[in-house]
Length: 247
Image (cartoon, rainbow, N blue to C red; front, side, top):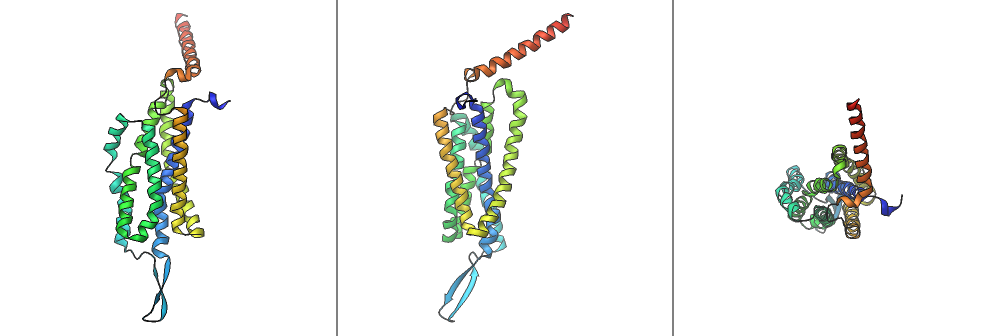
């Protein structure tokens, strides 16, 4: 099948699902990386004692670690209602792209922020939650506008299942990859790698949105052949049913 003949809704579906994978991989990154952040030792040279000493790179208490885990969700719950307003006024696929792209940029900034001061790290986590909280609502909005009417009955359950599964798959991939990257390259590398993947997705999404005109939901004529085949099938089924009733 030629690429030009592939319905746009398939491109949109792949775009949405891959974006959710990126976002939830980044979301799980801190959960695994923080183990190395509070246990990795850094060396200090004490002139007073004339000896080297080791200390954790981040000497955070368990209370502070709990606060850091909660910071993301402080921002996450704050913009849910705002997202509904934005979807009504702007392109939901653009909002989805912006949420994941900005979340990836913030993700790259987090290692320097953590090393600068814990307050800077807290602010970055809250900002990431603020940005990424609209990802899933945007994904549902995009899929809702791009599901063809004739596919609504069959497509909606698969759409919901696909979005949910992508969340868990992204969390699984993020946890596994973070552990491997942290062991080989250090905890900061996992933030940089996941952030770059998210930025790459944002660039690809932006090009796709512009080249394929995905900002507006599809019109019936975009999939005229598909709709015609579906309509012919429905007419045939109705004709068959009428014939059976007449018998």
